[in-house]
View 1 (tube, rainbow, N blue to C red):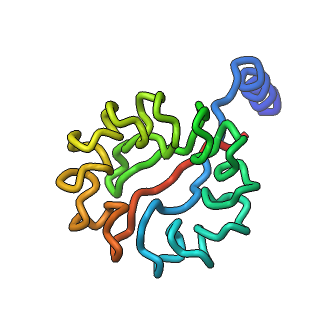
View 2 (view 1 turned 90 degrees about the vertical axis):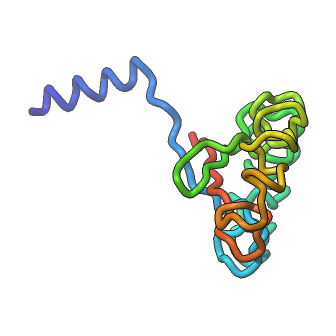
Length: 146
């Protein structure tokens, strides 16, 4: 039994294990949801080290490669809807093809049904998981945590 555990640990160490994923909060305009990035006392607090609103945290700093606020970030947090569908990277990088800030990309174009910038698609204020619905749950933000 010990040899199996040792073999699995050795295999994981040599092959590399994917980075862990961390739930950061909900990208939402709902200020009453404690997990919302719009709740300044909850997940949206500038003092929360894992908040995308924290200027000193890895997900909010303008210098971190994992930040939603770094226009050059390549490992920005990812957005998922209530069904687990990927909705793009929460990134201010306009050149990232999956960024919600790329006006020509699938997740940033105001004409794409998958974009949170489309008020008739994923960004509709009438969808319960839309970040623009002030009473909704928003999109889950998942970041890589090493």
